[in-house]
Amino acid sequence: MTKPPAACLIGWPAAHSRSPLIHHYWLRTLGIEGGYVIEAVPPDEFKDFIFRLSLRGFVGANVTIPHKERALALSKPDARARAVGAANTLWFADGELCSTNTDVEGFINNLDACARGWDSCDEALVLGAGGSSRAVLFGLLERGVKRVHLANRTVARAQALAGQFGERVVPVAWDAVGDLLPRTGILVNTTSLGMKGQPPLQIDVALLPREAVVADLVYVPLDTPLFQAARARGLKTADGLGMLLHQAVRGFELWFGRHPEVTAELRALVEADLTNS
Image (cartoon, rainbow, N blue to C red; front, side):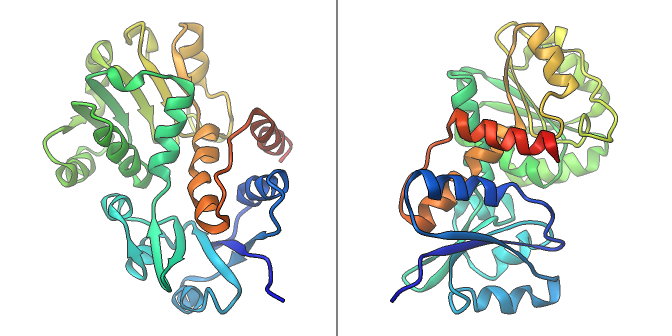
């Protein structure tokens, strides 16, 4: 008798992730027999763990900190994973371990759901040049945004990242942000500013055009000071929780063979878990 398919989340430490909650919801609502568990795997055991992934009974995995770069190197990555420089989703195709980065479609599909027509803008402003910024830059360029200004407190870091994406990404100093806001069609915060325990992001959203969209990758708290200011001005917003939910879709589809929906019920379930933790 064959065992039901199972996937896992590999991390170290294996923090309290919302991924099991999301995937169990979809397994249940779609009536699929399957599983999704957290596996705490230290860095020195990661290579052995993923080389024996199928022997351990897994059809694939999510990968989180600190393993995303190693996962890329130890698998066959697609164009998105290569461009982002990190893999967060693993699956098998013809016996080969393949990888992708679903943060790109998580970010883009969430924008499509929250702010239809956002991609008609010419210019974007991305704050922060860390790992998640790569997925955002790739997604914006792929969807045809003509120019993306990349602001980081350390300009050299923004310059290094911009250099990997070509001339459509323009590195700028942090103190130039105010001057760029009046022509920004989409503002994206990829920094930890505004996160619980971190200082708020000091941005004057009143300078943004009336049709601008504000996206924040932070989801603890759900309602960041940036969002409160954006909504008070009547701007469209796309939050970090929406991105988290949408980035989980492709992995589920690859592992379990069905396309799951991001529903209001699922969002409420994860929202309640975030609020109570």
